[in-house]
Image 1: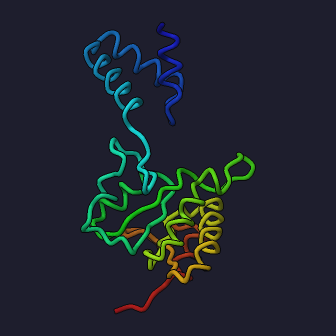
Image 2: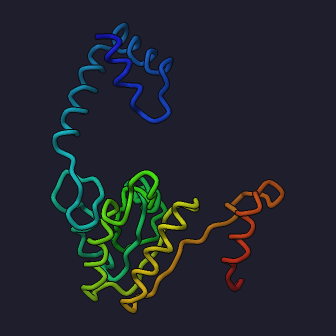
Image 3: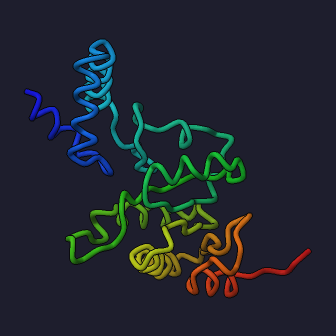
Length: 194
């Protein structure tokens, strides 16, 4: 049983065998009540959390709270790779539109194509003519850029404003420590200084 528990914890990203073993022994030796709460919470989540039928984020409801919120701007659609990206954007408090979650990026080598990312669903949303702008918020990786380019090409046929989130030097960052790709993105994405 202990070995199967170690293996179970090891499936989590960033958790190696030593960390998993530490989790297991901590729960068994010091916090069995916490272990039972963790087990119940995991079972509840696995049984009840599904994908929002509108944006594909994780939700306990058929339609997530963001999609159900009538005060959000439905004409703007921010396309992200993961539900955690939504959380990061929401913490900024700046964006008030809706989202579409890809749950990954295009990767033919891994067998992840347009269908796996729900791009057919996205195309239906774009055809509805209710969206004025899509904001491509995929990661600044090769795969993220390829995915953004693919979506941009798809969306261009619908006369929709296509924007890309800016990438560049973070606030508090110093140029001498930035890599050349970050500096290149920062320079090419510059805007007028007010």
